[in-house]
Image 1: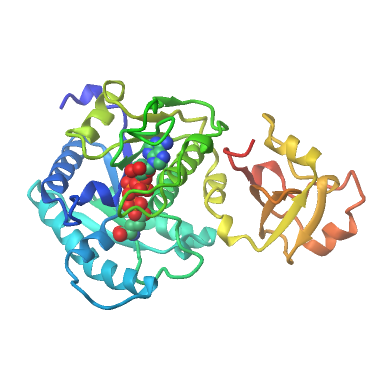
Image 2: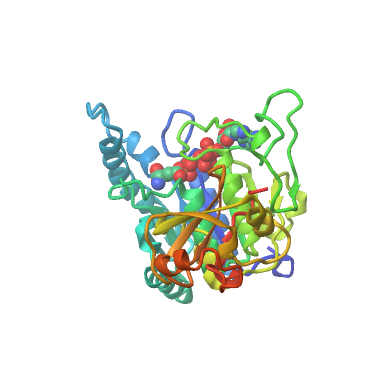
Length: 367
Ligand SMILES: Nc1ncnc2c1ncn2[C@@H]1O[C@H](COP(=O)(O)OP(=O)(O)O)[C@@H](O)[C@H]1O
Ligand SMILES: N[C@@H](CCC(=O)OP(=O)(O)O)C(=O)O
């Protein structure tokens, strides 16, 4: 590989279950070997790689025969805990063949719930990368059973790429990228570039998922938009294509896929907030005027004048979900003061903002 042509110094690579399995549900050893070889090649040329790999449940399914467990939570716990061992063992052997050490990092959404937890995770990945190790991250499906699960590993990968500030995020699935309809349907065309973070993609993306997938293409897109909005180039591509990782890393224009252009980088605190919606303590509802201002091109703070109501109690420093009057979640912000004070000054137009724009993240897919 020509190192001159490397686009990125660091990259987060997310591989979906369907890339790792054959149509009969068994792990696809050849493909995994090819992915490991490409990652090793990148690594040898100095690129720091974080691998987010799905596939535990799929691997488990091929190992546990008829177990009679009907409950989907138990089923996922059973399959993932059996399958994860097999999956990571395989990666470990394959990377060893390339003289590379890998590490298993299993996480839950709770591990990112506070800034302190988040920084602990960041430290864990940093120390692995600093020691030349490839972290292989997956959600800890055996213990993630509450409402606070990641939507899927696309969300986890978006969060990690943003947390570690990698130059790019590659999301590898079993299709070439985002199409203007269901891939394979007549007239459905590949969208090569998504420039503006606020483009509405939901109209042409169906909620159909691949056989083992969890979130589907729509969540992939939302995460991609959010990640690109935080300054990271996102490429959604086909992980079943030969050499896809090296092609994306050296000549992305030569390979069919969808690229989300990165906006200017965001401050670290906003990168955390972008994924912290599940940890908000309370909600506020804003009126139409405030909604337009907040989702407009200029950075705006949330003023009490635009707040219509509060839901739940909050203190200074707590995270607040921000909704419009139709119930649409438009962003997340950190309260500058507690609810009692906010209520007392609700009529006061000049009172300092409830959420300052430095501590406000507006979702890029809200129009
Ligand atoms: N507009 C679209 N463009 C591309 N794929 C789409 C679209 N609408 C739905 N899909 C489906 O999304 C699937 C990929 O998402 P998902 O099942 O979550 O994959 P993975 O397991 O790789 O995370 C594709 O296999 C495809 O069937
Ligand atoms: N953590 C699960 C994967 C969940 C998931 O997001 O799957 P996918 O949509 O295929 O990336 C597993 O390892 O089976």
